[in-house]
Image (cartoon, rainbow, N blue to C red; front, top):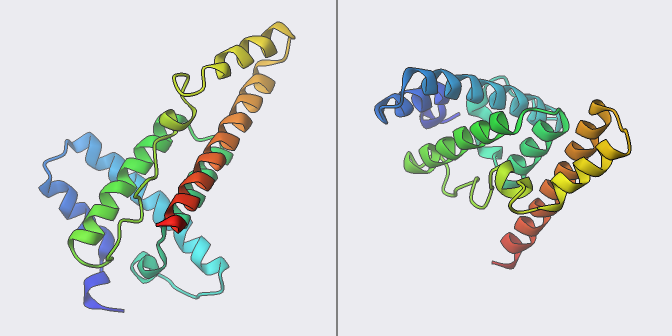
Length: 169
């Protein structure tokens, strides 16, 4: 492991402090990076790599990983605002990793917020679908699950578009 990747999380948090963010934002970023690093460690280990620290996993971060993390959050019904905040944290992490030359690419390039992918402005039929389900006397849980499934599909569709654009370049 290179000296550049030792204590990457702490260096990232120091970077955020230097940006002058509020204490509440700092707390959220710290929580978000902890969540992502835990998820990513488990993901990398599932590939058969025995690593023990987030810094050891950094070389394996890709755009595909960011897309998979987004899908994981949606599948686990994390609130859209929380997903978007976590994606914002990853954008900051990506900028930090490229600024410090730990990575030579922005792994978050083209990864959009959920609200941009599945928002009512982009997909105006989604609220109509909710109304239809309500009119059909579907339970609140069923409506929420169906709407989340449609959102997950839309995010998947967007990720496939992003992936195909990335391979065209």
